[in-house]
Amino acid sequence: RVAIFWFRRDLRLHDNAGLYHALKSGFQVLPLFIFDRAILDELEEKQDRRVEFIANALSDMQQQLKGLNSSLMVKYGFPENIWQELSEDFDIQAVYTNHDYEPYAQTRDKAVANLLKEKGIPFHSFKDQVIFEKEEILSGQNTPYTVFTPYSRKWKEKLNQASETGFYTKAYPTEKYYDSFFKSPALPLPSLAEMGFEAVGEAFPTAGIRRELLEKYHDLRDFPGVPGTSRLSVHLRFGTVSIRELARKGLAHSQTWLNELIWRDFYQQILWNFPHVGEGKAFRPEYDRIGWRKDVADFDAWCAGKTGYPLVDAGMRELNATGFMHNRVRMVTASFLVKHLLIDWRWGEAYFAKKLLDYDLASNNGGWQWAAGSGTDAAPYFRIFNPTTQAQKFDPQRLYLKKWIPELNSLSYPNPMVDHAFARERCLRVYKQGLGKE
Ligand code: FAD
Image (cartoon, rainbow, N blue to C red):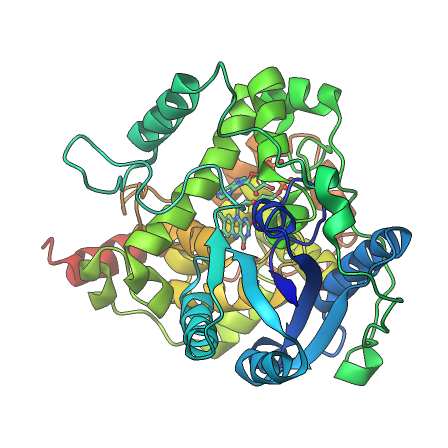
């Protein structure tokens, strides 16, 4: 007789909402992770560092569980089949997990919950990866916010109302109940090779954050040439850090940084309340009438970091080499693809999805639709970043440019693939046409 806790984007034992409720349930808790073939089979690269990140996180948890005389159970396959097997192998009393707001995850969880229900097994899911979710933050008219500033105001208000108890940012003290883990000798974890992947073996950003960084964040965060941001995005993506712990740090040391965590909540609730954005549609439908150029050669030059605009090229090269790109540069590269090259934001979104270590449907889609002007909070369509002045402003000493483009001052560096003034005019014309503003 066991309860099963199903890990997904919450790969930690500490301060984990669903795990806390499972451990408190009175049942012995078997911790489970499924390498989902519906996701893995879609990955094109054998050396996908995200799979490697997950494998490392599981192996860390396995060590911790070993110390508690328990073990993680790790399966590889399609979740519904695995749950069918598990329900035959174990006397499952209940299943616990945490909410995942992506459309695929919602469909998957519904199917699993139904399968379990037929067997009389309850499926309990909890809010864990955000501070506020779904319809928790609504406007005066009881509708979801579609503009960030009033949303963030309401977010902070709601948090402050409970500030004495710290209700929304309090840790779930799972460690009090570690005795409830199902006792088992350590079970083997599937290797990357067994699943058809290879390790790269490069270090990932660490899961910690220093107070000094937060104190300087406001001043440094826009300069890609200096280490001014937390690099925690991959940890937030896979839940190797707790959002509640980070929100407490933001509250204590940097409101600007806290604001970035609120953006993350904001885009998650947009995806939940406006699911069409996750289905390849513009948040504002009129933007789906823009006549994008289907120019594969231009797109390839952008992907390879060979546009002749140094900040764009540096960003794409950083992404290709490391799976990370600084936020300021994500904005500039995205804007360049959409506005200078007039290529559909969905192409760029898909490329980032393939490459980003911290890839997250809600934030990535939010960022791309913002750049295209089609999203919530979008900059007006006629505001077009100038990639040259952006570089002068945010990388004045060319630290970032020199790092990623060693040939910057030599003849082998290409000329700009499109003239800025020409691209600007073309963008305005085509956007106006599509939006019916002429
Ligand atoms: P910090 O500056 O230290 O911020 C702390 C955390 O706040 C981040 O780790 C992240 O979780 C969150 N955050 C910061 N900025 C944003 C933002 N604009 N929107 C949502 N959350 C934010 N972020 C992703 O996590 N996954 C993505 O797939 C993603 N795609 C993006 C695509 C585009 C076109 C743009 C413009 C932005 C995208 N972002 C995405 C947001 C942002 O660029 C990254 O979260 C940030 O660069 C991560 O670096 P950091 O951890 O050092 O961030």
